[in-house]
Image (cartoon, rainbow over all chains, first blue to last red; front, side, top):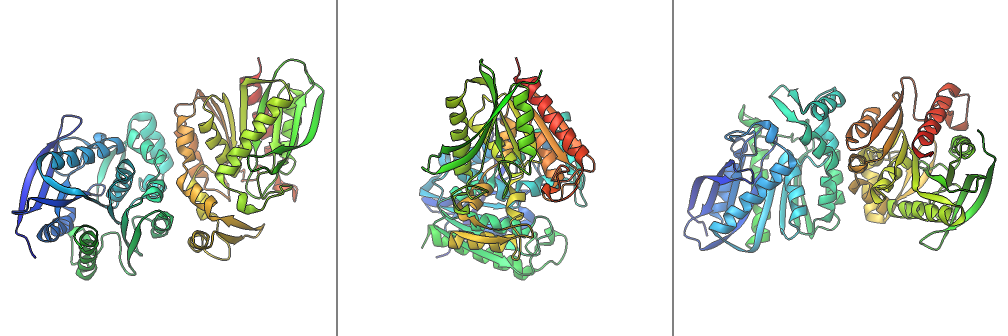
Length: 276
Length: 278
């Protein structure tokens, strides 16, 4: 059965009393439904180049609601990148989840998480806060914190030192330039998403492009192998896939076959856990 | 003033009811003395190519006792490498500390910890168990857990070895300098540990030595460890521009660079004496 869907653009109050821009996509005329809370990647948005938008639509048509929101300093956020810390991000995920639970009827226990890249790091850490969550989907997750630190550039030790001692450092990449908070850098170094995945006991879906040029795919595969307590681990590896999963980050033709397969598999995963 | 010293070769009971081979070096003095617990590296020994032996003698002469011991599966240990896990290693460090305190008058407020390479990982994690420890010295510490896992490469890639260990309970890692079994528990515990977080929480005095040409661990990753220790009372770094992971010892197999070794020994002794002597 296909549901009609409703898309609500909303603002959620954060723990810091700021407004978190969010999009809530839900099946129309359904009293209660499962929920997927999504986390986007670094320097991206709640739409993830349209991939989260399309996924939300497909899941809502199958009866599963999806909440997407912007992390601080990203897209429509009213805050600067200095507010982009693991603590704030986790708080925002918490407040986004609470908002839905307070305003809609979510089927008991049917809450899932999805994260892409840095959002995969956040989703993994969030699952550690909420071990009761039964479904976790990760797309090229940044679970190796050293890879995150090193992504600040060739001279990452200097960047780390500058950020920690001076409060922030400017990181310039081909595709963006932004300020990284020293607190963020330290939190990343001292966190361990591998440990979060190792503790996770629900169903796990991990998608990965084996030609990922942003994160080291072998480091991600270690996390999958380390998830020895998960109820079930489903992997979706693309031999020729990159970090963008064929989306070309919305800037070119990309590889729609990869994107389509990713969407299908992820939708199938959440449906298998929540609906079947 | 140089104190006379005593060296005791002993066997310490582990929590697993095995015997931990150990060497306890202490000054002949009547009052309570400070104590250093020394953790050695992966596939090494409590003597660390004579370097821990020399350091223990110098510290004891300066009034500081040193207990050093073999981790499970290493050197004189009666156990196999299957018992080489972070949990067992930390337990053995606890047992060594308790043994020293039971057998000699030790000032429990003046306990330090020393670790080289994988021993540096252990020392960092030990400081998390014992946040009261006022002095920690790390030599090229394996604070990047990822480097430990990815370093388990030999005839097969680290990913293959990791996968085999998870499936079979252990795997054989064949390196140029050693071939050994690495257990699933060790792999998983390392992957899930975070010595950086331990260093970040540490509030005592920290001595941090590193050869910037380290060919075993990524020197930049190790440096991040020193930078993460923002809550330490003080951080003394001792970086050798041309130093490697062996700190000039050539692992006891050649001439090496005695100047680096001597600078390291002097710096470490001075550090512990300045923090732990009354």
